[in-house]
Length: 233
Image (cartoon, rainbow, N blue to C red; front, side):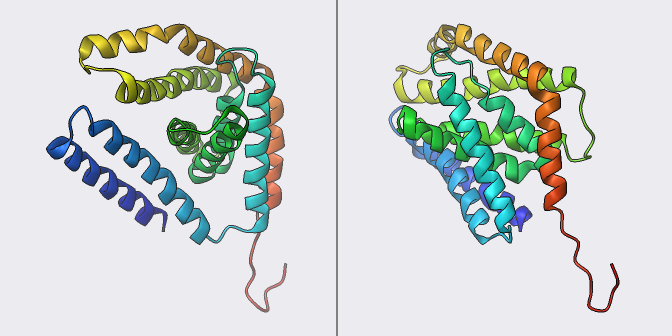
């Protein structure tokens, strides 16, 4: 089912890219790209709705998302320094790509109830979802990463998230779109990008060991072994 989901997302994105290059211009290209991002998020939640996740998994994803959203609100006074990226990345590392994506995207939606919803919301949902998804790929072997390695990864996530959001800014507000205007748009936000990356690094150094143990304990408690009728435990 997950392979089918990945295939559908790929086909959908390719279809929109073809339309964008054939019919798009400065006026329509941003809309088409935004639809692609929004479509990826929607398809992921459709799969979530059709999946066989139990109530424990659903409650856990909701709980972590709510906690991450609350942490974003608590640090509202510090520009672009939030523990959200670290929490989402760690969730993906421990629970897997799909769960990480759901935590990231749900966190963005929940927290924006406080910060305000808008055309940026699907982009934030996709960006934080991508953080969780990539972390899930990194954690496939169930091998715990050292705090130094994961801190560097979270540092890089800060730039990845902000540069995707900068792309939304460029597509939505920068005219004309060329190398110079795109470069200046990205350069204008470099201070906030660095603050996000450094904040992720610090949160990871301070909280990685404790949070990892907590999430790993929840993961072990959710494991269920099914026995055939007549087998002994």
